[in-house]
Every structure is written in C-alpha cells, then in structure tokens.
Length: 241
Ligand code: CA
Image (cartoon, rainbow, N blue to C red):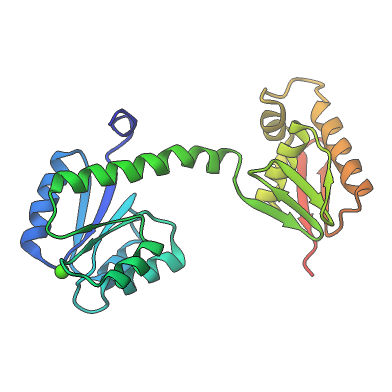
C-alpha cells in the first residue's frame, strides 16, 4: 500500500450494468483509496477511455450491447491498460481461457470486494514498478533506415551489426530518435548525456555528437542525419523514403 499512497488515488473505470453491485463496489473501492468512475456499458467505456484514461479497468463480462469480451478486445487494439474481468458463475471454461490471454486477471462472481481490491493493488503495483523504466530510458525499439536502437538492451545495430557506443553517446542517439525532427538545445543534450548542466565554453556535447556521428557513418548507417544548428543545438533529420 505504501507504493500507492505516495501518489494520487489510482483511477479505476468500473464497467458494470448491475447498478446495485456497481454502487456497492464503488463505495467499497473509494473507502480503499481508489477514485472510481462507474459506467454501465462497453460503449460508454470505449468512449471514455481516450478522454479520461484510467489506471485500471474493472470490466464485467455480461453487459448490454457489446459484451465484456468484445470491449476488452477493442480496448486492447488501442491501449495498454490493465484490465480485470468480472465473470459470471458458470462461465464456460474455454471462454475464460481465451479471456485470460487479453485480461490481466479475472474474478468469478460472486466475489468478496476485499479480494477485488487486493487484485487491483497487485496489478497496479506491477505496472507502477515497470513504468519508470519505460519512461526514462525507453524500453522501446527505435530506428531509421538501416539502424535499430533497442532501448531495453541498450544496443545499437546497423544492418544487424552491433555498433559500440558509450553510454553517453547512446543516450544522445536515443533522445534524438525519440524526438526526431525537433531541435534539442546543447543544454538539454548535455543534461541528458552527461547529467549535468551546460557550462560556459563547454564543448563536450559537440565532441560527443561528432564522435557519435563518426561511429554511425563508419558503421554505414543510412537514412538520417544529425544536423547541427551552430551554437544552438542538434536535430535528427530522418529522410522520408
Ligand atoms: Ca452484468
């Protein structure tokens, strides 16, 4: 609970057409420190998610209109939100098996709300602990032309051959790729590459960028250019094929 209480209340979207159950769950979950937005159909949920993205969705399977399975499928096409499904008693086993492929967890009705709160917390804890990594040094794969940067593996490949870069060079390339076409100031890049602010007559960022350029060009990287704007900063121009 400590990990959660340090941040604002986690926002839950509760999709349940049984109003009595929804009211009971909402009251209970709010007492547990969650912010709860109740809706009664899959259509409403799909409409609301892009406008007010929740931290987690509690989704009933039996809904009027599109059911919980179809709603889950549509959520998955656009969002990486954690979802807990509420299934009816006696739901076919194969339906549940299929559902488990897309949902983070499921709870058969009737259930103890205490159990639901515990499962929500477990899933949020999991997604909070992986989030900073994704944001800070991007677990993402980026690239252009024949170059690929694997954020998670901290590796750069040109035509599938590894290019040896220092950690600072790799951070520069990564941020240039993430913000391709955007001018990054020398101060910003210095902060990102070496973790300190730019000082007067500080040319270290220019040295780093020129070393990075040379390594990429020796490796045969094609399809983009790191362009310098004299005294101001750098931009990665990706050639559109
Ligand atoms: Ca229902």
